[in-house]
Image (tube, rainbow, N blue to C red; front, side, top):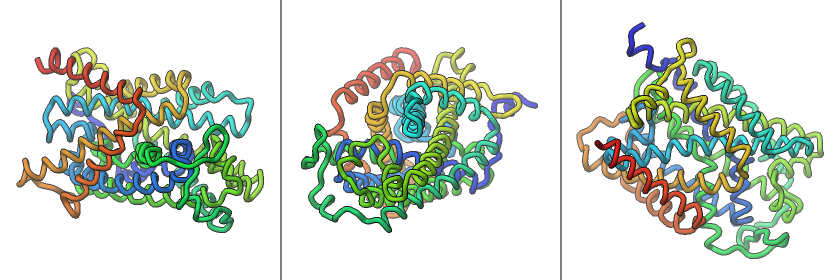
Length: 440
């Protein structure tokens, strides 16, 4: 085997496998159960508005990603795109942002796994069970990519059944009036109160996090058979399907609850609504389905971001010994095994030390900053590279990227000050590293 092949990933994915992985990265069921719960905490029943706006912005982001991803189909995904279009310094910031997402997103979902295990059996500790689950999923992620695609496709089918059950409960057990969204309320100190407009805007970031993941089709593109156009199609199709499933389930889950106060105060609101409507037996079935969904999500996302970290080493973003270490490909499984173990290992540590809400809000800020960079790149690319081949071309340009930039900009103004300060420090340190070391 040649040196080039030893350090290359295996092209073992067809379009359907790519779409399954991308949709599993969105994780409609797991995101609804884990990150969408944060939307209810932040904005109460006005979460319907926050979630709807977030889904609309997500589609505009997906249109930009689909076009640029078909132009630059590499495992580096979004950070490689930003680097090519906006230049190396901004590209490096995008890479740092993306790699940090790779640690926090799997940890967030694994914490959801612990939360639902605890709901199934209160004797199970949330953080410890989350960490154990994350460790096992990391080992699964080292296997060949087409084996992982089969696993997530099976789990995705189970996910769809559980989502249908949640939607059905709301559809056939409509218990709340429309006034909960025309005059929304949220839980404050255990009591229902009115919702401020700023709370709705703040919750948009968590909504965007909930439907995030369609960009993973780009990260797997070096393992895909076929044309670059299929990468763009997979990005947009996955986004449309994920948004439709999550938004429908979010709305029907909320309107199907009998006790709004209990629902908004629960750590597992969507499964609680099924339990209340159909009994404890159905509730346990949904909880077990939720566990499958979260395992599926965590596996797919660990696979995605292991390839992002691997690409950062291959593209010489770090000192040479680090690049060589991260760039290793398993001789048997043809997977980026060192990067996979590193992403999974750090995520496991975060599971032991973090809370669910704190990881959701911080990761949401990372995500929307990268969305803004992609939208800017989508505008600049059409001006800078007018004659470049675009295997998948977005509709209605330049409206989608402009909507993304405006929506993300407004949303950023309402995020937690502590999260924004941490991001600012990360930017300063990253730029210092870039100009003092990498650029030289």
